[in-house]
Length: 193
Image 1 (cartoon, rainbow, N blue to C red):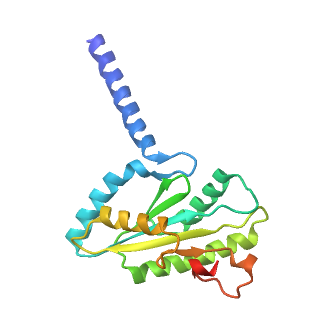
Image 2 (image 1 turned 120 degrees about the vertical axis):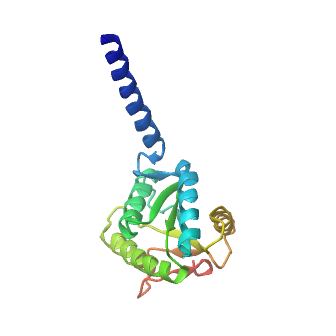
């Protein structure tokens, strides 16, 4: 009996440890956001929801641009992650997609509704840039909406390709307008840089 109890306790501890490892493996430790490994699970869940609800989901890919102040890259990424996480709804998913990119999945959101979140983000980045004495934050972004019966993976490949194509008109840059003298903060097309 005692041996059975000890084995049982060890199995419970091992199971708890495995669960914790699985959880940690889906989280990017510096930013505390989901990492790219979480996308399979997230997209499976979202595709079921999109098809069941008949509502679209919007994907937005953000790239943190290097800054002239030579700030530590990871420090800038962590700040960008904080701003993104604080900007989007609790039902949205912010994922650290690569070293300098974030993917945001906005369930039940069309492109017009996503623009509202982007307007909030513009204000947050602008306020952060005004308050920051270290460096200015600049982001490039593109987005795409997945309709019901659509394919999130195809939409992701589409926005990845747009992001690689620096001259694509669908890729916009959110720059620190405080430092370039614009009166109002807005998303600027790439050619305005």
